[in-house]
Structure formats: C-alpha cells, structure tokens
Length: 130
Image 1 (cartoon, rainbow, N blue to C red):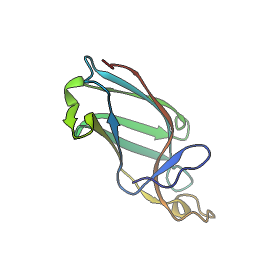
Image 2 (cartoon, rainbow, N blue to C red):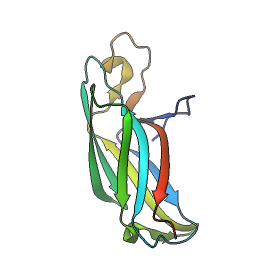
Image 3 (cartoon, rainbow, N blue to C red):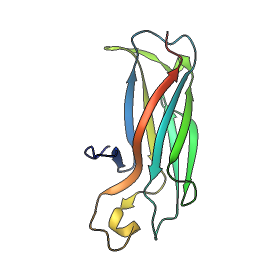
Image 4 (cartoon, helix red, strand yellow):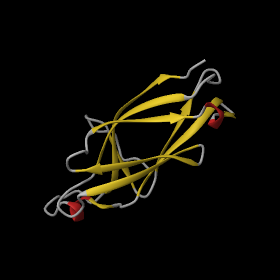
C-alpha cells in the first residue's frame, strides 16, 4: 500500500505498492511512464530491489544503492497490457520491494516504524496515448 502524502511525495509501505493508470482512449502504442523514485536505504539496508509489474507481468527490475538511489526510472508498458475496465481503459502497475522493514530497523535512531519500501516523488506518462 501507500502511506499518507508528504510534502515531497509518498512512501510505499508493506510488501507491495500499486496504482491504477487510466486512459481516456486505448493507447495505440506502448506507454512510457517515467517515475522519480527512491528506496528506503540506511545503515542496515544498503541496497534494495524493486520488481515492477504491469498487468500482472514483470516488466522491470529496479536496483537501488546508496550511490544510485534517488532518480528517474522508466517503464515501457506494452499497449496490449491495457484492459477495458468499468471506468475505461486501464492498467495496474505494481511495485514489489524484495526487502521491507521498519524505518527504525533500517536506520537505528529513527522514530519511524513504518515498513518502508519505495518512495514515489513524481511521475509522468510521456507517450503512448491515443
């Protein structure tokens, strides 16, 4: 799931964070989505892997390290992954952190006990719309 919004973005909490992307019309070509992300890293967790799924299928594996944590990561979602939902064309995007744990276990001294995975700072769909 997701925690509450913060001034900079939102933390994904628990073993999976998902979002539903909706489109006015069915995309005619693959969808490119760019995310500004980071992972909860610290003294006790120096790397993180996030498995990214769209339409229930793995489409990317993102690696986060202290030297390559905050940044932009892109997905290409095949147009045929979009389904006709009750509210129009849609695709579910899921983020599955391999390691999830309380922030105060990752960074001793932190008072934050949320099970943090990936931070979502921003996103944009850059092409593929009909």
